[in-house]
Image 1 (cartoon, rainbow, N blue to C red):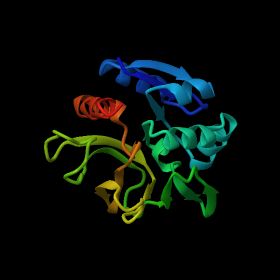
Image 2 (cartoon, rainbow, N blue to C red; image 1 turned 135 degrees about the horizontal axis):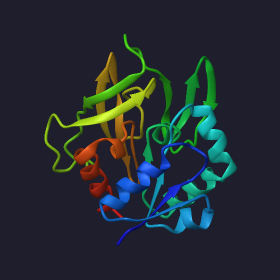
Image 3 (tube, helix red, strand yellow; image 1 turned 30 degrees about the vertical axis):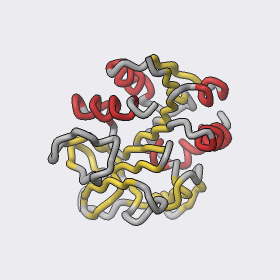
Image 4 (cartoon, helix red, strand yellow; image 1 turned 180 degrees about the horizontal axis):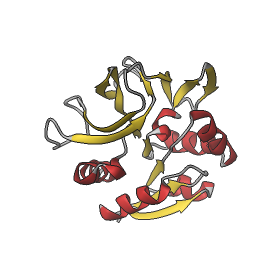
Length: 204
């Protein structure tokens, strides 16, 4: 059984992530302990709310060092929602730029859409080489809640970038070596989200 640590840094929505991972067979620990975060087979970085507030919580638990160590060792990390956004270089909210964790190049910026936040079910367009979306039917829907997004073109060469659209195209998921992330909430996406989490567990 894969051992997964969900990083507990003061962000909300952690319990639903724990339950969703347990549903697909992971042994899950909710912890802010750096050793537990580094040593687990997989580390999940959840996140809801403001980019700057999440970064403040992550700095308190030394997340930058934890993630850098995991990436150096090739140990998988999964970011969810704002937990995906903070993996990028910076986030811009209300005109204020906050440095992110910098694991991926790119900036999180306001989503240009007639209705904000983007809340509800939406389809995505994964690349053919995606591991997260392997075996998923075209037109499968996932649950989003966000007002900010990473625009297409972000990420490193060789990244598998999945796009979605709400007013404009945006990055719905990214896979870059040991780093994977989704803008949507797999833990709120029913059977489709469970299948995606199972695909991620298969990489551990």
